[in-house]
Amino acid sequence: MCIHAQEMSPHPEQALKAGDALRELVPDADHLCHMPTHIDVLCGHYECAVSSNQTAIRAG
Image (cartoon, rainbow, N blue to C red; front, side):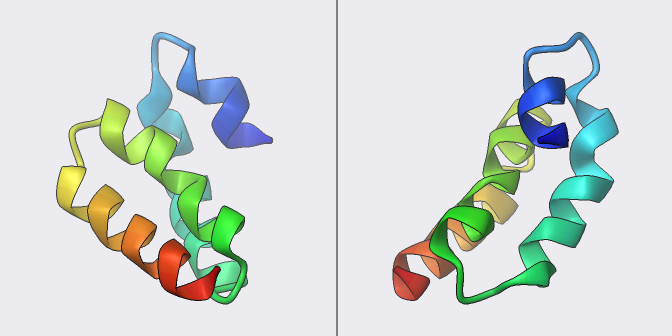
């Protein structure tokens, strides 16, 4: 929920830590692997976004 709440805020970087935690929480859950990429893209962490989305595709 933190990711959706922060992604449209003026400071999406505040959700980076939550995104990193979520990414590791359930690595076999495709949607949970994908969610942090909303923040990654907004913060310019494009390689991380691509990697996480590739993980999400494999998990799905």
